[in-house]
Image (cartoon, rainbow, N blue to C red; front, side, top):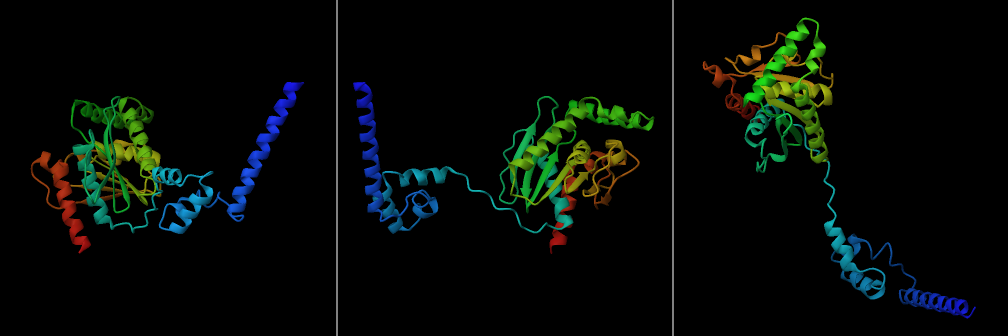
Length: 304
């Protein structure tokens, strides 16, 4: 019984003491609130010295300004929505060619640094050996897939051909089988990750790729519906995919004179653009460097 009385007395004493303390501080502040004022970084982490001093003097028992400002500096600032106008098509095509070339150069390890073309991410998928690169330029997110480089890529090329032949004899479902389909799935996953990572930094998406990379770009495009797909010396669309792209997706196939790969397939969905130049050497004519050079010339003329 005595213990209970002691506990009640102690509790009463502590309660009265805390209420009196709160009342005294409230009176000192002349009825002004600490919360909603001294816990706001915009008010106490700037140049308003009077506000800062008042908070330190009257509210330091509740809120420490140093902690408020430290927490605010650690919080990432939300990036503004990209409002820049979409560049003209010639510049988009030229930039797509640059992105496709970067997929070869920086797809495996990343590391591209440029003030006008910001790297968002890269991929070397261990399971499928898919290599890809993504970057932003002029408010456009470019997702590029690498073309044929090694024996594994040649196998993918052959699988596309087998799928195409299967479709010709009424076995279109066969096109969804094999390692190539896993490549496309990895490509779709990479696209979604890049869109999420670059959120707020772009207003348009372009999927691109050279050669086999263009084939992958077309297949990925049928599943994610980007604003545009740009292929560079890639086979015809009926050779690449039995599916059609969404009506909201613009499709452009850029081809160099002398290129033989782009002659595979009989139907091309979308617009076909032929560049000047080219080469009698089929390897040079097909190469990404040649087509990039021609498109950049065209873009410079369009900008002037």
